[in-house]
Length: 388
Image 1: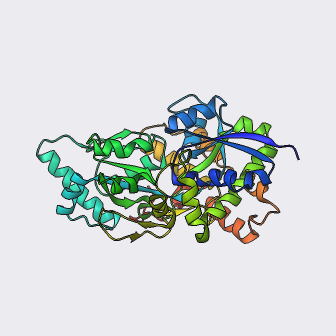
Image 2: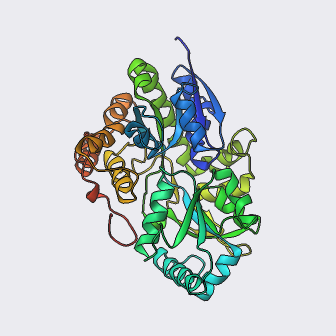
Image 3: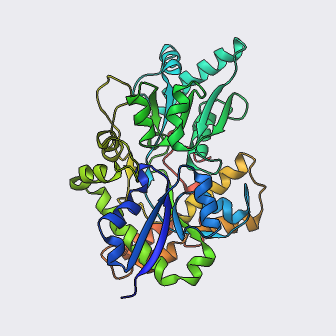
């Protein structure tokens, strides 16, 4: 067997786990791949190093390959996502000072997104009446699930995300330091950075994005379309390796070992005990509080989590329109639909233990309107029963 060397980029988050496990547990080697992982702190670095060819593929934010293929926010480079790397895994965390104000306004530890949002609206309005500066909330990248889910939640709770708060971009590993320094009042990021804010007494977890959007999309395997076209065997082998790794990550009997592996300095590099919270969905929302269960907080493989749903890409496209990042056009919509590639995912897994059954294929394609896209209005699971 000819061994193919692939360099994959990742950001230190719990949902980089399929890449780490594919290397550490030999799933990549079993597919004839010699994997090298490169840690980056920011999503902009991931984007740039994939674009210029430093990385063959990467752990990517779901909307990132869509934005790159549309040429917004950076140079236009067609990309594809032949698989997703999981569902959920993010939360919204606020400073301890803001949490104190929110509790006065009716927020409660473990409260629903609607309850927490109503309290935040009161605080925002009170600050406006007193002539104070708007709250500053950070997210990880302009073209991210974090940005769109944070904006969705704020708007659904009656807060204008462009006028009544200030949204800024920070890399995930810098969130806790910025919160502790008082430079931001809250952030939306993936684990373990929310739990670390709690552990370091810098903040409290207000709500999870899983509560805002049940089984919300998150990271994908992203790569340049040109590279995938030129290397179909390597692309398929990588999908198979990562699908097997994701299945391993989701098994409860492996969670403790997964936390220990990710805790290594060259991966996430934080305490295994803290990492285990997001992996198991047993979160500590506020220092000194009991563990709070968040079912399905982070899913690596179950619920067909690795299927690259074109309806998710189209929903991201609609958010780009909604928040003024892009102008609508039939051609842009078609490009957005084409980025997520269930055809490659299915073909890569055909004949393996993870191949989709006929019933599963029909259900997913019905949900997504077929391989070429789908209706983003078919997206469901939002806390306010809408899909804007």
